[in-house]
Length: 168
Image (cartoon, rainbow, N blue to C red; front, side, top):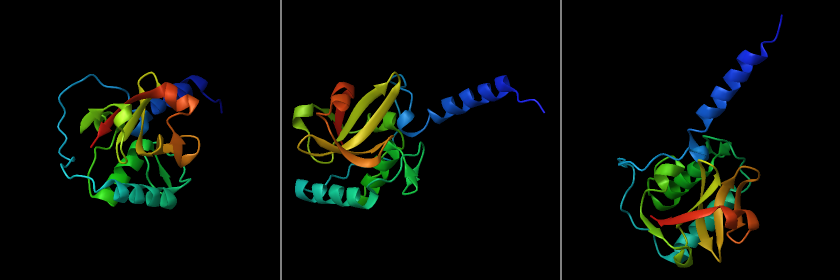
């Protein structure tokens, strides 16, 4: 029985490319009109309640492992975590992938961030990451290396990768 390295190598590459189409690894698409029936115009509660909800979500999900395409406590990716958080904590339905999440709401400057705003990063060519702003330049997200956690926008890695922010 001979192992066919070429066949399995090609299958592995195809598998990896398919996985990049979901969750945090969404490949950036060209600007096109997209229908977002899942989004609502529901407003977030006051800042104090938003922060309480987000810190409570962190406590419940802390260290949940990263899993591309996941949206449960067994494993979750960044856009899945954002979607679950907004649905469970605020009753707001968001799109499933990072690209579509970046197209909702209104774009805001980093100086005007408030708790509950979505912060986006360009981590690799064509790959985006999303988190939820808390306060004091900190955000909640599902990290590929450490799972659900709080990070700082001032961290060397995140400050270099910062792309934009959106208020839902």
